[in-house]
Length: 335
Image: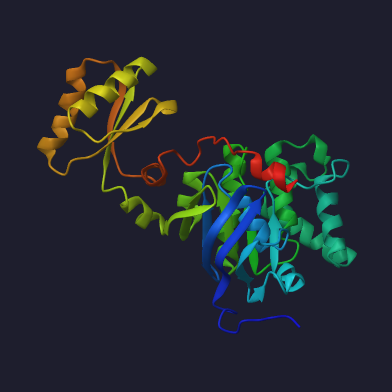
């Protein structure tokens, strides 16, 4: 008999407590709690290897949790897996298309496997091709499509049936700007239609643009959660960014500004130093004077509002998009 929690059904699309998963000695997900209201866009944000995909696979019943509990649309993932799968659609990180079928044939095949009649399948497929701006390449073989085009067809396949919960795992990784905008626009339309969305991403801009609430995770553990505005507020109001002309200049600037008592965060790959902006104009001038006094060549100095990247750096010590030593560990172990 399937277990249903009447207090969850209709209120929370996902409710997880203490979710944990091990791969040998690696704890990929460590005591994670999740609450996703129905109709919301919830983002799991973190670098590669942070546990996002493992979390998604447990919620989709593709992996069995080693600890904790989880309910999806009111059904327990451990005891009602079939019911969970009936209510959600999962689009993974890589397009799952038959390379020797056209884009349209791939979608028709999926529609027929879902039980649609030939006429219904044709109608739904044409609607999805329009929605994903894919009409121009609908009769091209999947193996001849660009990465962005394949991704759009893969996402369309996940919407042959309207799910209660749509799970997108890194949906725009590797996409060109146009394809990314198509995906974002479609996501907004789906949410407006009442579909709940769980989005995993390592792109701060994506989470900021789409998510109602964000859970920052790193090494399988919760770092912080809240709305994008709440997370940005964790690092203060505004910041002064200084971009050095070269790596040697960056290191010299870092030493000089730290010696002058300024709180400096360094992003070496971007040759950028980020300093909390003083509230008083006179103090702000002090930062500019301090930079000028070093006589170290710089490319830019600018005042800006904090971003989600600032929040992630403040909380974890590295950018969300930074490559980690564990980038591929999770995928290798699952495979």
